[in-house]
Image (cartoon, rainbow, N blue to C red; front, side, top):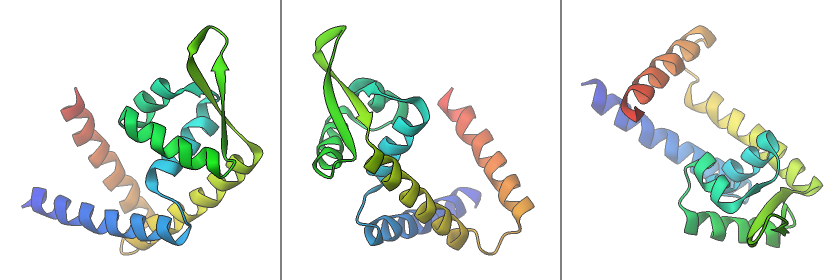
Length: 135
């Protein structure tokens, strides 16, 4: 059944990605937050949660870890002092690129049996299924 194959493939993908991030002394949430900041620029914690699909409490915990390493800085939002704006630092940009390289290597490992055109087809089909179910 295709659903079983998809589930089993997802388990392998999760394992490979988790091992890859662990080797890079990071977690998937770290990369998602850094990549989002790199793409969209400074944002509130709530906005980062919406853009990444990470639960608000997990966003705070991951941002604390990133801030402890000097990858992001928090500053009060001038429009609303109750909110923080998160900004990527130069060290955060470097970490994001390092993690991006690791993710690309993990993608290559996961999809090694597929030709580039097959990878593109698979990505398009999975995106189609996902978009259908996300509404």
